[in-house]
Image (cartoon, rainbow, N blue to C red; front, side, top):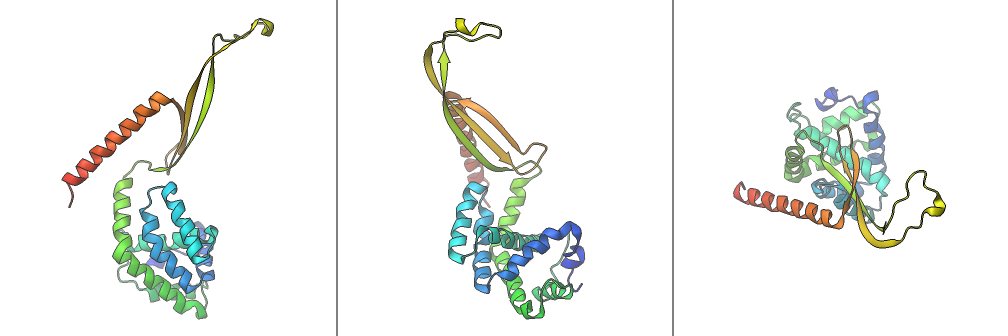
Length: 233
């Protein structure tokens, strides 16, 4: 291999087969489509969760004409390349887009006629990385730390009846005559994080308890803003 990147990372390795399947979508896209995706990549990477990233994907799909099933792999390739450039453990600063493309050509991932387009694709990633992506990835790496990171959430709201009596096991059903005395709202919350033993968990809350949770989060948000303002560099 001509480049350090593909000396460290075997693009044909069984453990890296997702790279090969993702790269096929890069080869199927036009240069203009790739250009638009990579230019939007910093905005996409800044989105902290799917709630904010999904609208960016929808907009990207409309502007490029690429379905989301094709956008995901191209974004992953762009993110992989920029992450590799920014990874301080493996110094590939001497690598060039030409070397990366030649390596892919040498193992049959791309053809000679595709070489120039892939060189330009890699050059664009380097340019956008240096100007925008690198700082985003460094921020994300610091934010992630070593704990699971919030990824998505969902909620449902329902009304539950309050009855004046409770049916007990063994009680004859003919003797059970409950009356509805009240209706209470209950909020169910589903949270998902990106890693850990349990990445998905749910809980339910009353309207009052939900207000306390919101207030506590708003307080933390204020404290974070104050901390950021006092320590800005």
